[in-house]
Length: 443
Image (cartoon, rainbow, N blue to C red):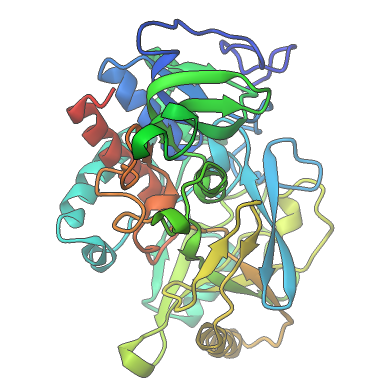
């Protein structure tokens, strides 16, 4: 997808322009904040149901459509960077700031949540998730990729434990949610360069007059006010948290926003050079994983591990990244620790000693099986979720408790992080929550 000369996405209003219809309900029936995975799904489905939808995206540049390229390097124009702490380490978390969101700049791996994960969400979630996942699969159509030499080397060390991971790509082209759901094709008005500063409230404040709590729109960074009957936040776990906290939706008002977020901690193990020599171009970075279980710990906790045989060194797929060793990832998929997202967008990642011990044991096991003794680097999977969980901040339809006209439909609402990458789950949950909004005709 190429950018027009004015910096706008093709066929979309240029940043700062006002392509709105107005009307008695304000500037739109529904305003969706964030054109990432969840935002594209919600906007499309509500437009299909007859709503006048305005989809706001803060970014103005388009990510490369080249499959396998992770456009998160130091000179990237399509990510926002958030500082994070992990114990004594200081990290940077890049998040997509473009149509398609982080799904336009990450690996696009599509792994469904397991039934046990969904049962922990609530008794009706296995059915709801299955329906949402089927809808998402029809649109995205993820594809499996052949096993490369690195994956084959790791799989041979763990016979019977390897699983294929589907990819959101078509040939050499990445398929994002913006491509697959095509919200503009359903009449959604997509505005680039529209960064939302805060939510707007009836009465001018979150409490409003007489204690009423009703969201009536959003205010942009340039002070433009947009009114609507329904705001749906899909700005990602960090972006949605910043908007909620900055607009007065916080623990003091009974909403534990930003608390208890989950992530899949990961250790990166250096492996011998030359393993990727047979890989031409940009193969899928992660076509297969190895799944392991460690011995049971206290309170019945069984640490579950995902070994990630990355096909090539990261500097091959991240533009501008300094050359680094080829590494295999070892991630903990059911961590005990919980972190926090702060109002300024900074993140405190969980640093639970139980998680660290389990990861160290798993990495030692992987190194032994592979017959290597490489250096280990601490990292994270970039799977942050659960900042506005269903059951605590939102109800089962994504409505923020005690607030009219405001919903959340991105990774923030996941009650618990599934034991896989969350991308496919975000799409499935967004499909299900959008269906509920459409059925209620909440606008």
